[in-house]
Length: 269
Ligand code: CA
Image (cartoon, rainbow, N blue to C red; front, side):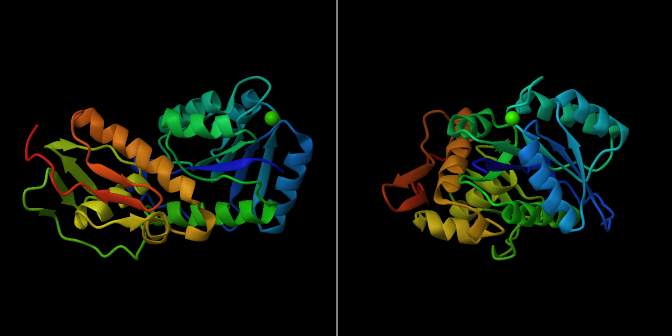
C-alpha cells in the first residue's frame, strides 16, 4: 500500500480538553474508493476493536459524518467525486456546525506532490508518515491520535514545563500555560508541533538542535516520524514568523545539522 498518512492535529487541539468519552468501539470513517485498500483497512481496524464505516465517495462520507460523527476519519486524497482536501474542509465545517468534539482526520495519499500540498496548504496537517505504510502502522497511528485527542492535548512530557516568561531582549514571549507564543507582540497561530518546535528553540537561543533531537523532544512518537517532518514544520513555522516580521530570520538552518534560534534578533520591528 504505497500511500502516505497525514495526521491533522491543528492548533485548536490546544484548547482545554474536550471530554471525549473513550468509547470501547470507536467508529472510524474511511473515505477510500479503492476497495482493496478499504478492505484491508476495515479488516485491521476491526481486528483492533474499531468499527470501520467505509464510504467509496466523498458524498457518502459527508452523509455518514452528518448522521453520526466518527471518532476519527481517514480520507483518501484521490476520491472520484471530490478531492480529499475539499472533503476535509467540508467535514471540518460540518464538525464545527455540529459543535461536538473535534474529529481528528488523516489523509491517505500515494503521491509526494500531494504530501507537499497538504503541508503547503496548511490545512492543519501536522504530521505524516512519508513512506509506504503497513496496515498495522496505520492502526497504531489511529490509536495514538485517539489517545491524544482523548487527552485534549498530548504535548510531549519530555519538554520541561516552563513558566510564562519574557526572555531578556527577545521578541518572543512564551506562555507555556496557555501554550501560546507571541512574536513582536503578535500572537502566533501555531499547530501543536510548530508550537513544540518554537518553544524548544526559544528556550535555548543559539543552541543547535539536530533533526533527531527535535523529533525526540517534540514529537510524541519519534519512531513514527521522519527528518522530513521536522523540515516541513520548520518551513511553515518560518512562514508564520515572516508574516509578522518579513525582514527577520528568526530560525537559522545549519546545513546537514539542524536548526537554532538566531541569538541576535532586533528587539523591535
Ligand atoms: Ca483513490
